[in-house]
Image 1: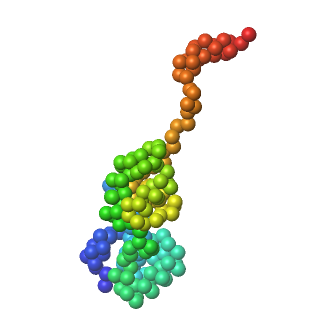
Image 2 (image 1 turned 30 degrees about the horizontal axis):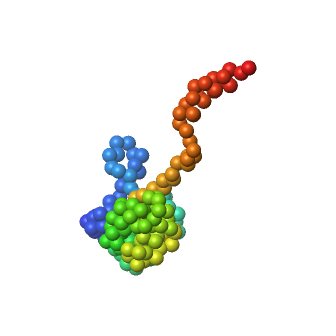
Image 3 (image 1 turned 90 degrees about the vertical axis):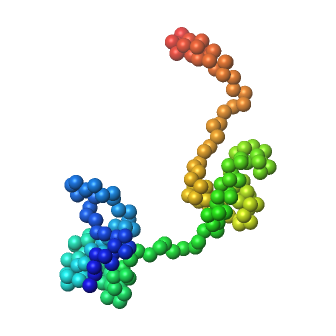
Length: 182
């Protein structure tokens, strides 16, 4: 039998739709919503509801309910819990990322680059020099945007020969003459 306290061990509780009137609860994330649906489905399994009824009640297709029921019958309540995401672990651990953050904060010129401008290639070279880990351009981008919180900043393109006083003179004298016409 599924007791609410078993699900509380996961930190999960079934939550009604955030559009429900008077709901002061924050909306669930997608994984939390999926787990809440499975929780509700298990409650309905124990009430001997049919797969079609459960599918309608939780808003999924009957095939998902059949799969959940099979997992529940084989592993019980604990088999329905959310699992950590799988995949390859990151190449840099948290300590290495903080070392890279400190190195990048010193600027590109501190690492021997001519201009104080970071590019993916430059960041990759610094990461390899500091940690000994070679990262692809895509991995450097994920490091900068995901783990370090940086964003793309492009330098403003401006002609070196730009003369602000000449531009102001042209706007004040030439533009009104051209604008009026002959």
